[in-house]
Length: 533
Length: 76
Image (cartoon, rainbow over all chains, first blue to last red; front, side, top):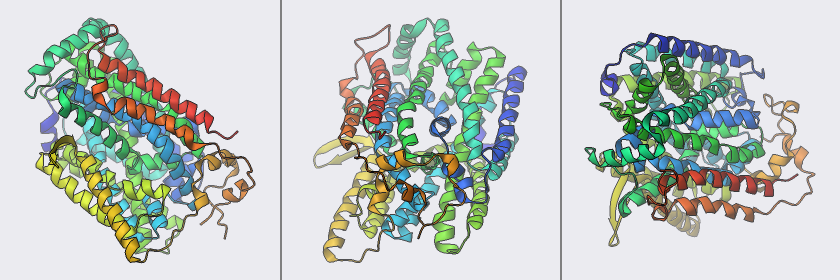
């Protein structure tokens, strides 16, 4: 109960809302198990279980990526931050705007090279590109480390809505995750892909209703911003409606940039991208996914609506649930809370699949059993996906939620340290593998120490060369990483230190050619790729 | 491991579109990563401060630019 102690406050049990909630939960559980039969293929292959056969078209990819990137925790934490601190919480908007131009440039290239070489994870790419198992292991280890607390935080999303429904105790949470673990085990990536459609449809309906209906109850958007402007400076840690001063603005911008760079290094993001059927599908989606960003902006505004409505929770995480309880009839509260809880299942499933893929390829196959067959890989990945979810439940039940939040914040700093190996690696093979490892180590240690010194607040006040810079820790750590990696590469190249070969070919990187030239998905036996000598 | 698909694509003779179009995608970054540009309350629209509607406007601006670049660099 330690975890619940931090976030639960007494709520009455709402029977109508609870029945709707459970009914929707049961509905998506059915979809999750049934997904194994959708676009039937041999699931005893990592390409099928772990990437859905790389056959998802524009629509499924849109739902899957949207459902995967905009997590339940985001839906709770972003408006909670806006409710508690104001403008700074709005960094989520520039973050999720600028990430798509970056994705548009980088990820189709990633898709293309991974497809050409049968890579399932970013770590597979790093290993192949640098001809180095340790570099692959470095990327895989970082990915798993950053993903674990992120999965755990999805549980917090479920916990908050269960608490708001008046359901106490840990067992409902454990049951929910056991069910999730079972259908992910059986159906692989097909399960979250199908459930994402239900999740996203529910979220869109709930938020559109909320932003049309709630302002009529609080006197419109103008009154909402006025109320926020009055209330924010009176917080224990004063907030503001507009970021005031250079420090706040630099933190705002670097948080947006650092988070945007980090997002598409996360294994769950890469997994969803690689499951698309072509590079064109990925490119097209970057123009369509901002619909979710618009939605996220509206969700952020719910924090101000909660202020205007006079909601006064002891924990800001309850700002939105309490707002919904205060304005909506019970049945719609049930729909809204189910949307949030189901919203936790999709990313949790994709994250556990991504972590399982990483372990299977970069640890099991690379180090433990190089002769593993496709069936061995799929079996190990399925088992690891179970272990990962059990681990997440243990983290959230055994540790105070505070630690999971801090670990997830660190996870963003950590995953950024794989940027040189992945993103630079997509464009040039110049970087030396040991320079990448050294830069990564410096970034990981420095980022962790800086974050710890600030009690895990996202920003670090750096005084360097007579300059005072207050910015997102991840950006500092990445800068140190890049400096070390570039300088050491130059030195190692000058010294002529051996560097093994590159298993990819220059022609593997032309994302503009690949996307247009792919055959129709049905014609392609993705479960049994025919190797060409 | 090589997949058959790349053998099927090899006869493509079309010219690869210019990647210079990608430069347009810098606009959202320039517009959003310098907050002093938009950290003001005025001008308001219907009671919504500039800081907020400016960033919401970029959601559409960025999506349109991305769609434009996508079309310009698509091989038909």
